[in-house]
Length: 134
Image 1: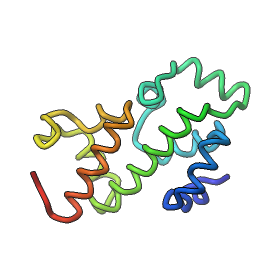
Image 2: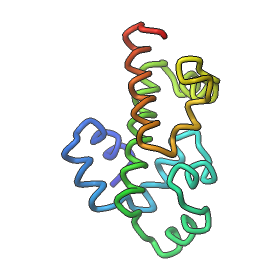
Image 3: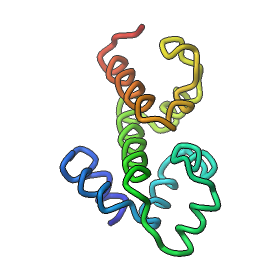
């Protein structure tokens, strides 16, 4: 699956369930990494995997397990929504790396290792999109 096909499926929950159950392949993951602003080191923290494990997945052409696949999808959805809300990847990246008072004065990027954190960021993007600033 190409990154374009993957991005088009980010709005279809049923498709995302199928993709996560099947597992994100390493080639698609590499495309997702390239389209994001995060390094492999950061992704390894988000996925609770070592960089070495990700390298081994590449060498063995393995797919990610369901839980890691779900996290990859969640982060990709967040990226897409953030770029839509902020109008550009650069503006979204600036927000992700800024301390946000509404989030307890932490940087949003620090919440990407947890589904609850990603949900919190999606909620915050929704508030920003609708002009509700806390």
